Image (tube, rainbow, N blue to C red; front, side):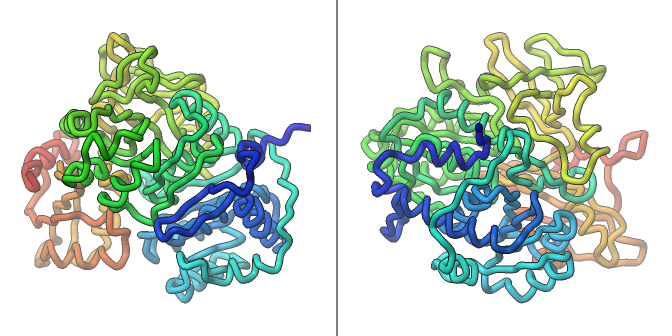
Length: 508
């Protein structure tokens, strides 16, 4: 009988020599494939011992570590649902996620245990564990008492594997539900499309609470039985030094910009590398060209989202076409993509419209939001990405903008409506608007424009300070201006395009 558990496919790809190195950290710690198998078994047995309901959610907000990755794999192995939470999230955000997802288990950093456990118990969570990046915490202490053998839970392709919260453009975050089938189909397609081969070694310098680091990078290496050079955080000098031992690197555009600032980035330094992949935010043509000049290699840009994992990619194999800067390549095998007009009809090539997609990688819907899910799919089953773009005459997809004013800052999504909601709750604020403006390091950052209530005196810096304790750092506007009125159209709608234009040179 087939087992469609994603972990079963990843485990089947482990090399024959289980004692060879699977993961190596920057401190020189080495984990073998056997270590991965045994540790995930012990953690899966711990979860099984808690007598959880089928489909129980395991919410995790911890610093990046190999043990945090093992917890993710153990959650799959035991058949539960993994819920990664950005380490930058503060109490108001965590309170919402725990209340909405109602996880059975929460794992957090020891230093946050006091406030996180209070919120978790209030949300009905029965088990709260700690896990720190130095391999300490109650999770590992408890797991140490369990067997290192575990039978992988049986799952069907439609069974839920993970929930990823993606902020809503209107109101609070939505939980995108991804199945074992969604994740496995995408991992297999990318293994072929990106030419993964025996002997490949991945430099992993991305966070693991995000599609890019958790699914694209991690699954890519594991389903190929490839060694991972594990970095707890991105350090440009360190990554350039590691290129001699590696063949594949994945990063957001900001990371490439930072490496280009290092004199050690040369053709010689990058000569062992087979593939550089960029995504999560638009890659400037200038960065693409400068990288090619310095290293002799063309960055492969791709496009995906929390709800769909990867959708399109520039070709790896030159037989399939060239890698074109400023584009996100072609729809991946098994993925269908179309561009539609306001009437929903498909547009001819070259015309700009709404991007819609369909395929085995597309999510099952939003957690406990049936109406919202219905709205986001067309009657004939296509998912509305909310992105605006075109397909050119050669079939390359171009993303030209984002509907609903999404801001992508350093690879993270910032949704203006969420931030505006918090600003509008502050004393003396009548209304606010948040827009994204170009930034040399982050690609884009938020700028807030605020109208005070009659008689109130507001200070932009003070508003930013008040947001700091409540929201993740990447969501905090970089500047805040106090104004008498906001530009509006005849319907009274704020014209954010005018605000963007007005402030676009702020960080130039």
